[in-house]
Amino acid sequence: MPLKEMFKKRTLTPQEKKQAERVRKAKDTLLEFQVPDGLFQKCTHCGKTVYNEDIIENYYVCPYCGSYFRVRPRTRIAMVLDKNTFQEWDEKMETSDPLKFPGYKKKLERQQAVTNLDEAVITGKGKICGKDVVIAVMGADFMMGSMGEVVGEKITRAVEKATKLRLPVIIFTCSGGARMQEGIISLMQMAKTSAALKKHDEAGLLYITVLTDPTTGGVTASFAMLGDVILAEPGALIGFAGPRVIEQTIGQKLPEGFQSAEFLLEHGFADKIVERKNLRKVLATVIRSCEYE
Image (cartoon, rainbow, N blue to C red; front, side, top):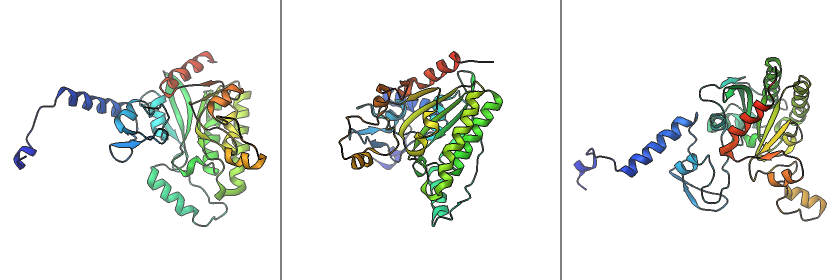
């Protein structure tokens, strides 16, 4: 093709116009447009290469096998809350590095630069179908969603504000558990968050947890399992210790699907498995059914 033809303005075909409109709608829908590097990515479950726009349009679910891609906190917030209603709380909260753990501060700085997050959870207030809610969303991108003093403090403060404002709390869990670099300080967050939720419950207020992949360790052993209503995404890994650790400890093979959302539902540890595309509607229904003065 001659060089001058390369920059010649041309009319888009109907198919190109349709694709451009899909991209525009996706960008308008999401508060933070989560696009992995490149135009395509491979599904880790079925191995097929998927066009990024198809992933976004399908709520970050593989269109071939239905497996769920992990979602960043701000994208999750944009999927669930009414547009332009989110008010973030407790930004820029810094850890005190209580153990002075070697290299920990630098690791946090690298994580903040790569993920554009301050910590492994975002908290704040917003609306779902016009109803005010307090929300906390954990992200696996930031040190595998591990819970240190900042994560515990932000969640505790969010719950306490929700109690004061008499608002329901929704927490999206996604975590590898306690943050080992903070030792006992990290483990203390289990009790602190649970105590705040106990007061929220005593005030007669609603708490909903949404378990996403993975929810493990100290998060599972504390606020993840304290919800009045416990929802889960399909196929999410949910448990305390990992399956391999348990098998090595007890010397037995675990049942098929052990620690999956479906296994927990069958054994009474979750109330409902909700597809991502339906989650906003289900949350709004639960909130409306539990309204209070």
